[in-house]
Amino acid sequence: MTGYRDTTAEVTLTGRVGSARRPLPGVTLTLTDRIGAQVSRARTGDDGGFAFTGLVPGHYVLIVSKAGFQPSATAITLGAEPGTPTEVTLEPATSVHGLVRDRHSGQPIATAAVTAVGPSGEVIASTVSDPDGSYRITGLDAPEITLVAAAPGADPAAAVVPLGGGRAHEVDLVLDTHSTLAGTITAGGRPVAGLALELRDAAGHAVAKAVTGPDGRYTFERLTAGEYTLTTLTSGPQVTAVAAKATTADLALNGPL
Image (cartoon, rainbow, N blue to C red):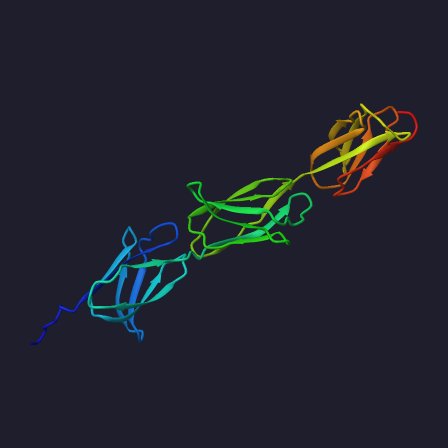
């Protein structure tokens, strides 16, 4: 009979598309046969669900694509009986990379923890900077993230990064690193207690003061990278140079205090 169509063998392909974090609406799906001829097209609904109706049993390829995500192709075999819904997970194509470095010296910071936090405050991904200070986080599925870098001896730094779908974003993270300088002040081989000291930076500006303890020891904490001079606050000041990256500086006094 002309125009007659036997629908008794027709089957339906259903399923859902999502990322690792959420369902994906508005995803384009294309169904082809095994030689690449298009059979049907569909789009996911608000819940990520989709349905292809009016299909005949056989072998197909399901192609799934959405801006900002890696495309997916899945072989599908449909039998005469309804099958299990097909679940497709798309991997986000958006990434962020850059360099973690010290603000004052410009040197890279290795083993810094770099964390991507989503709009709701949840941690999406994290990594650790390489020996050259570089880092990379891939597979980001969020409209924007807060990127946080933290390292021992440094103040954490954060930056808000708007994410364009499917692009690689370059973001350098700058940390204020700190160190500690400690040492002993002696005179005639004996520790000098209660001695006032001043630490000056390379420009001659006073940055910190300390007083030696009963054992002649002193400590300056939370110092930024650079060269310093250590000066006794006495009627006859005595000065010693402190090299960059030095963590100790002892001073043996000469003459009266």
